[in-house]
Image (cartoon, rainbow, N blue to C red):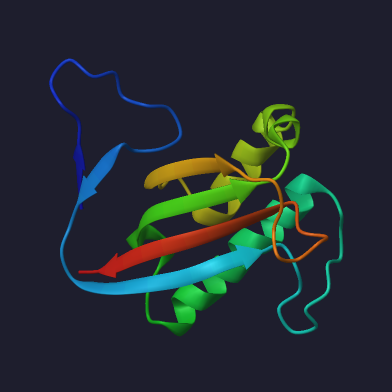
Length: 130
């Protein structure tokens, strides 16, 4: 996997603008921060739901034969900008604890709501197995 950075651009912190790779594509539907066996939320806390959503993503990757390092894109949908902004340190710690020091292309989108009323965020992922 190659990080693409146009000449003169500053390297972003915590994500990549673009990656180049080739292989088998794995796409994961948006994952919310609930227990996937019971489809219930065990916390209303933003960081707690983030932790569970990332764990769900790593489990799906494993089931598809991919690793967290194979992720090339994450799109985060959140309902409250302040939840994200006020928890950036804890978000970074949680992300690194689960995903490692792997920072794919990422987009953060603030939305009016999510399908699951208790969801604070939803994350979809794309991975490429070389």
